[in-house]
Length: 229
Image (cartoon, rainbow, N blue to C red; front, side, top):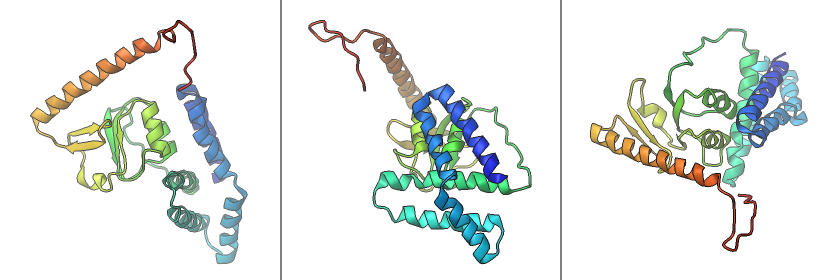
């Protein structure tokens, strides 16, 4: 039942992302569905339950530890970042195994999201609601799916900060500068004004880019072409 619920949730997220952001981003969750249906994952899960005569939650934790060690041993940073996709799928299955309902947080308020880690499916749900102003995470890299989703939704995100979640508490004032990759906690008023001015200049720059994007693509000798990147 937990697998079935997880499959339904991931399918729903995939369709929502496809509608809001485009098909190229929905493939992230197509990959999550493939992970969920993976024969190796199911085989490891069932083997641990039989051999150790344990609960499903414990077996799931053991499977996660195995994949965690495997991905941490990889040298390629891009593939190492894919660990969060495995964690995301297994964490969702684990939550669906739990019988105790979770208390819903107030999702309507505007906020800056500070966390140790934000899994791709969590990012898709939280960021697409439009009330997350910025993201600051201990974990992650520029090629992580969470960072990619944030950029596509124009949400400033700084990741790989190691311990930002320990330095920030509820009610703090933050500046999250996604351009320069820095987060300032409780900055003085003069710095806030400086960054408000910087933000306005950036917004003006983006407006000009949008105008340019609507122009026809022509070479200097008036030959029309379609830019692909």
